[in-house]
Amino acid sequence: MPGIVIVGTQWGDEAKGKITDFLAKDADCVVRYNGGANAGHTVIVDGKTYKLHLIPSGVLHGKRVYIGNGVVVDPQVLMDELENLRHEGFQPDLHISDRAHVVFDFHKLEDGLQERLKGNLRAGTTKRGIGPTYSDKTARFGIRIADLLDEEVLKSKLNILINLKQKIISQVYNENVKLDEQEILKEALQFGRAISDYVCDVSAEINEALDRGETVIFEGAQGTLLDIDHGLYPYGTSSNTIAGGACTGVGVGPKRIDKVIGVMKAYISRVGTGPVPTELKNSIGEKIREVGKEYGTTTGRPRRVGWLDLVPVKYSIRLNGIDELVITKLDVLSGIDPLKVCVKYKCEGRTIDTIPADIRTFERCEPVYEELEGWQADVDWRRIAKEGYEALPEQAKEYLQRIEEHLKVPISIVSVGPERRETIVINK
Ligand code: GDP
Ligand code: IMO
Ligand code: MG
Image 1 (cartoon, rainbow, N blue to C red):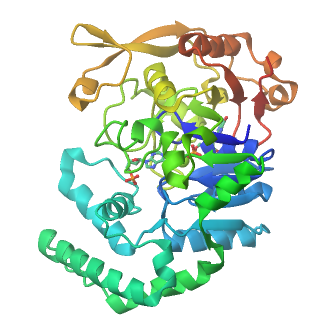
Image 2: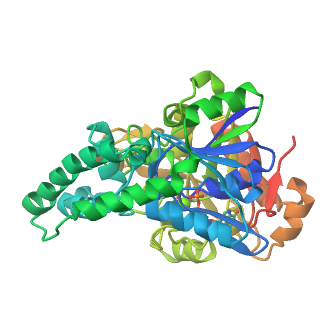
Image 3: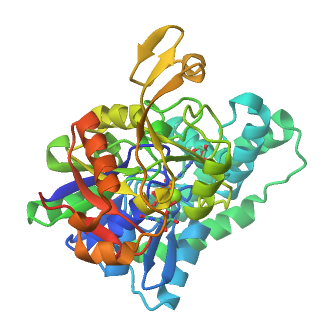
């Protein structure tokens, strides 16, 4: 199975990082294809926590890691992440696409200003400059990694971009901020020199790796409902988070993807704004948030949580062509009885089981629930993880079976704790 995409099926934070790390053991390399430092992928190994924003989660296994052209790269975050990993004794074998775009501080500033202007339409962004950087890329104002290696090119491109940004900041947003062109140029050149050894044509390298029969994991960031085209527009991010994004965001043909693995939480979480039909604003929600430690990896914001909603996952299966599902955080639901699972919505007298394009319609969607029996609070998940699927509480097995039955996609892995070893592979 050489080309494997790992994709989030909900609103992000499904534990893609943990699962990528788990599967990376048997892979040769891992490549990120979308997003930027808005991503926060957590991997916990032997009690030690690693939070990765830009470097793919395969790095902890010492695998080759790639940042594809579809990623927007924040220099400071990347340098800090590299330094932290080296400090922990890792030697990241990192490769960065010459075609990836660079996030500047003025993008982050603009991100905040845009959110302020948008009012109710704001997505509650991570303020990592994601939207403005992708906008500049699409408008062809952007600065790419390759530009950082050529002072003349960088100087002329930055001059145009900084002039434009200065006008936007001063004249559109009336902010008293003066961009220092010389300083920005100096820092960009410094960053270029610091990463020059890692810069390459990632598309060429990944295609060659696949030609050699290597296993390549394409690690998605965010989730399907945050996709720029298919997500809950405008309450999403600015990249194609779906599996198709792996082709454009790395530069491989669709036939190079052999398997798509969809990661889903056993409930839902959402950090940011916009409608969430199964959101729980009560003591059960609080319990899930506390037990599941549902606070943003990137921003620390409390995540909104709710009952498992299978409508987005079904939508995700269609959009991503998901072959297998991974259920994470099953342990968090211990002691909650009954458990509710949303299987469709009621909306203005109609029943729907997909995500409407119109956000006003989605706002009016009321979940239709099935109730399932919960399992006891005191479960020894470490023991179960060691013993395997059969050791799961009967009610937990029924919960998983109901999900499979409804979605008609097999569950291949169940995660029952944040640690790498708290993972059950299902061999049916
Ligand atoms: P990602 O962005 O999809 O990689 O997910 P995050 O890392 O942002 O959020 C997932 C959170 O859940 C992290 O804090 C993980 O350490 C944690 N986690 C992952 N899998 C499990 C699990 O099975 N059980 C529990 N309790 N926590 C988990
Ligand atoms: P990972 O990879 C969860 C959300 C933000 C906001 C919207 C737009 O860790 O799953 P942006 O900063 O991208 O312009 O914000 O998307 N968001 C995420 N939510 N997990 C993420 O990444 C996210 N990345 C962005 O909260 O609502
Ligand atoms: Mg995350």
